[in-house]
Amino acid sequence: RTRLVVSTRRAVVEPRLTNLEPGQLVTGIVRSLKPYGAFVDIGGVSGLLHISQISHDHISDVTKVLTEGQEVKAMILTQDKEKGRFSLSTKTLEAEPGDMVRNPESVKANAEATAARYHERLKAEQQARDQAASELVAGLDLDALSTEELVA
Image (cartoon, rainbow, N blue to C red; front, side):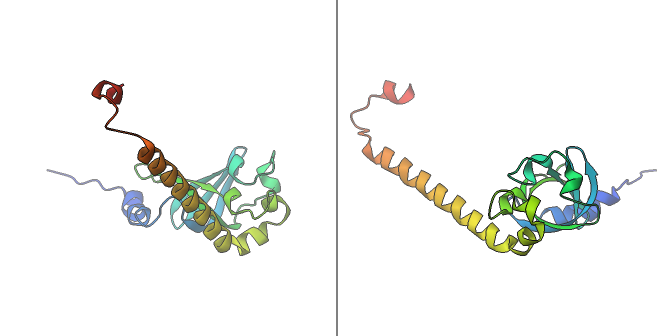
């Protein structure tokens, strides 16, 4: 007799994972607080908001900034689709360093605008890197270089 074992969690979570990408703004509920950060539930998917990613200001105690059951907006930094985990950041959503400590509601209220500025800045930085690389390549005299120089 052949048996099929299906992970319920994986069956429920996997479709949601495909809709979530690094850099995306998400809303979730703080489910548990640990000395190193907070676990945030994003529609059945768990994300870690590490203490270093809560604010630009130093935080020594997560419970002074977040509470269990609190709704937060955060940006996805990285994801591990295999394990169904995400690393999150509210620090990237601070208009001014320390806003998450002083006024977390303003960070939440302005999250979309701040995230848009963050993405514009990343795009501008990428364009500047691409421009510098193309100028560097254009400045090379490839005909003057020997094969050995190209390999080295």
